[in-house]
Image (cartoon, rainbow, N blue to C red; front, side, top):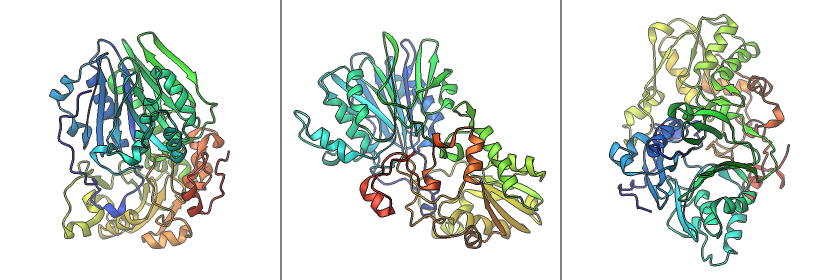
Length: 495
């Protein structure tokens, strides 16, 4: 393995310009490719680029030339971490990549992925999307392994996340990677989509609930696995199918093999449809854009409003706003312009700019909205700060009325499966009625789509979806300490 020759970031947490007003933060994006004869480092770069929306804190790639694994990773966006020279130096036939938003462990260079360990059979690199809920059990398993002297993700300086723990577990198994994964995968609980590799083999695995998405694609001379179909599109791969819940796929010189390590109990994350996935991604046979348009149509039926114009909060509110306008007969318009280059930054805004709040990201088109009764469509309300500032800004720009419509139900419970929602105490919905939230954000009216309406738009059976952030029914056991804090029963595993 060659060390990362770039200088690590300074360890500071990258932040939104208004760090107290973050909405739901994405999980992570994973990508893997086995393609002899192809420039796999560049394929991985573009695959990660397509998955950038899933994590903006760090990016990394591991490449094997059959004899050794080279890892390069750093803090920042994919385009900031990699350049032409770096990618040209990463030669091989097999690679994995990762874009990260931290849900466990601090946002530091040490926690960037892929992680790497040396084992009895050579090198091992791993990238993870999701969040494990039984790390205490896994640490105990690792501590019992022959020759194990430490719990890596707690005691070493390598990292402080569950990904490093799984990497260490795999590295203790003196067997080919496929057999090591077969032993370790059934021990993991929570949400996980994993791509892992040694010098010759690529393995991908998805948790038995299939909470996070993972798809398999075919190249002319190889195979690709990725978090979303959009990543397949950008590298010219053809979608073959989703990796099934509880399935492990192995790819090497002998071809592709698939097997089950656990019985499938599908509980796909419903928030992928609301916000997380790209609109051009396909999940469960449905393009996300079309689902979101359908959500907007159902929202219009459930929460009508007398208004002159429907405007989205770009970009995530746009498809639902299109659907709302089409169903209601109210004209659609772009009343807000988004600064696409705000993103994440190390530069602190001045106190004066901080007071402007959302204006750093959105600016109203005054000529479009002045004197109009507006329906403003957004994807979710988490703390309510964004909507409060937005309503105030639209009124100052001349809007006659502001009717807020939300294309998801109220977010009432935290997520333990890879989305960094606020704690329950910080969420605005628990304990408040819709009318009270409406008054808190200063809107003329507020309406959420019902949970049944959202489920209907996905065309997925309700029992096959994880809806925990909306209804508190957690499909995989929640860690004990958090369960007690939330007042949940000891056994959280429900259908």
